[in-house]
Every structure is written in structure tokens, then in C-alpha cells.
Length: 374
Image (cartoon, rainbow, N blue to C red):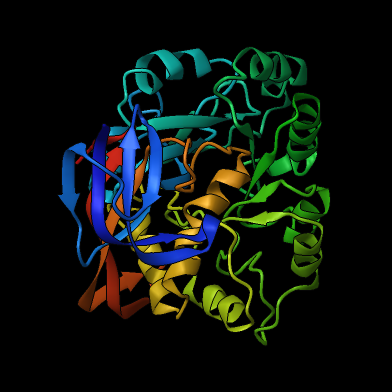
């Protein structure tokens, strides 16, 4: 007997090219079946008229709550949005990843997997009135220690995070990215590179990224925007995509611009992954959460299936996870139940431009590990 069946929902699973009214069965914490007449279950929930997607994955969050000034409570954030996996984007470094594991990751209900920050202390100095980039001091960038910790925590760590730019690496410029890339190569992991104002330039950063590495804040506003003044896509952006660099939104407080997004989407360049970059300074706006970030792409005319692809299977592949992001039988028993509300919804980007969206994603529940979780 199954533990749970969701019945009569519009199942959208881009990982299997599915978009149909189907039932989904869960047993022993896994996906047990998908189709019709799946048999008896201890619990059946009728989700007629709702979208049922694989459990949403937010690829860029900061949830080291209490351990860093930018962390938010993971369960309090994830539950209302129906997010079943949070990827923490380098809040902790080699010096404090053990505390992140013990005090936040292990007690949380939601699944949390972190990028390891290349800086020993992680993101330790970012708050209102305080901005000390963790990659401004070479003494904090010890590649041997970072590699040893990445290997010791290999059941948890999904990549190496580095922040480079005017406010995060200053005089060290590209050195931090070079160190992060070397550690990632030896650990067999992807790099996630944050990009803010130059220096360095977007082209320099993209030039060091390998296929499978991630550029986050990929639709950031000027400067270091991905589109030219005339709205064309920058040549280095096209070259990076051609060799397999992954483009992630990472909205946050300062890293998503409607002007950039409209230019890129208008040219047919969709992000590979849509993520919120939720943290203490973005959770009350302009990012708010993953669903609001996804809703901005509805406003830009991106199709529902493409949006869901960017927060399910593509997000899972970006961190090389094959046990989630799809409803393939045997994968983790996670699902998100959504609807699309109609109305007039103000949507604001990182530079204060506000548009009125006519649709937004709304969460109606989630399944985590085969059990209703909401």
C-alpha cells in the first residue's frame, strides 16, 4: 500500500517532458508510481485544478540562520513556498561548515545542501552598515584547507562558492576565483561564481569558468550586465553558454534587473536556473522568495514548463543530483502543489523598477519525503 497519492493534478515534470493530468504515488519516502489507478493509499489528496511539480529546488539561498548575519530560518522560508531542497550558496566556509551542519542543516525539516565558501570564514561581514568582502584578504583563502574540508564533508558539499567583484574581492580581483576553481577541480565539484560591480569584468569571470560551473546573478543590472546597450547578448555570454557554463538568476537584493532580463529573454536566452538568493536583506524585498522570482518570469512571457524546468530538473543537474527534480520512480518523494493566481501584482527588481504582473505562482502545499508537508 502506498503512503500517499496526489490525484487529479496537472503534473508538469519537465525532466520527463510530462504535462498531463495524472496521479502520483509515494511510498517509503520515494516516488512509487505515476499514472492512473495506482492502487490504495493510506492518504489520498485530491489536487484537481492544481499544478503538481517535482519538489522545488532553490539553488541560491542563505540559510545559516544564527551563524551568519545574512541567514534566514530555512523551514520558515521553505514551507510557505513549497520548496523541498535549499542549496545554500556559500554562507559557511571551511572554518564553520561543521557548525552549519550540526546546528542548522541536521535539525531542519527541509533538505539543505551547501556550497562551501572558498573563504575560511564564509560570508562573515555583510549586514546593514557593514560590508567586508570575505575574499579581500588572501590569508582567508587557503586552498589546501578548503580542499580537505570539501572532501571531509563530501556527503554534504555540492560545490565551491566564490564571490568576486568590487565589494567582495577588491584588490585580489580574480585571484579568489582562480583558487576556487583549482579546489573545485581537485574535489570534482562545480564552482558557483558571484559577480557584482567591476572589477573584475563579466568577461574575465566567464573566461575562467568551466563547463558545468555556475555564474550566479546572471541577469544583473548594469554594470557587468549580460546585454549590450542596444539589447544584444554580449559575445562572452554566448561563448560561455556554448561551452556549458550554467546561468543562474540569484535575484537577491541587488542582482536582478528587468532591463537585462527583458533583453535576454527577448533574444531567446533563458536562464538555466531561477533562484531567489534569499537572505536577511532580500527576504522582505525585492526578491521575497522563489515563487515571486518565478512570477517575474511569467511577466516576461516565459512559459510555465520552462520556469518549472529551471527550478526542478535543471537546478538538480546544476549540483549533480540525480535523486530529485523529477518524478521518476525511485527518486526522492518530493512534490510541490501550485496554482497560478490572476490579478495585479507589483514586481520590483534590484534597482527599483516596478512592473505590474498579471499572474503569480501560489503554493497550495508540498510533499517532503513522501508525506504531506505544509
